[in-house]
Image 1 (tube, rainbow, N blue to C red):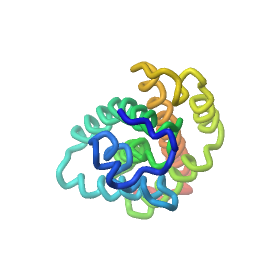
Image 2 (image 1 turned 90 degrees about the vertical axis):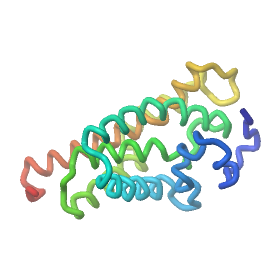
Image 3 (image 1 turned 45 degrees about the vertical axis):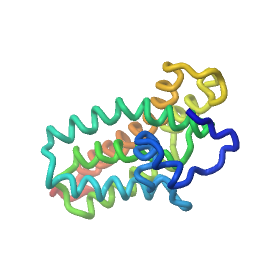
Length: 189
């Protein structure tokens, strides 16, 4: 494992050196110089729409469930390599969380999917409480800070911290969509 002590942005070459880095950085979508989380979420949306031709709902449940478990290790490990608590280019968490949103709302018209995208990006980027509280808790956890002696539990806990705020953003997105639907502000589809 090579720790990036300079905390510089990773390159495509660096990313493709391991499968974990490639997954964590969303096959390069996380290397976008502008809004990597948004680019990663757009990538997730496109992959999900294409994946619907190949995977059943049950397949998606396994992919997302297994992916979330693996993401705790992958995101924590890549974060460790970068020497950062939560590098913005790590987008595997956005990808899996938005796949969960899409899994639960589809089939839905494109405009509902777009609304879900906007809501998810709002909650993930702005991080209103309680999402912000979750994010701050894990970023302020001194015992898992990069640079401290590395252990498997620390890597997993750091990775969980990277993933959990995106799951909270997905939950908030689904909650708003459900509220809009039940109050009939959102036409049924």
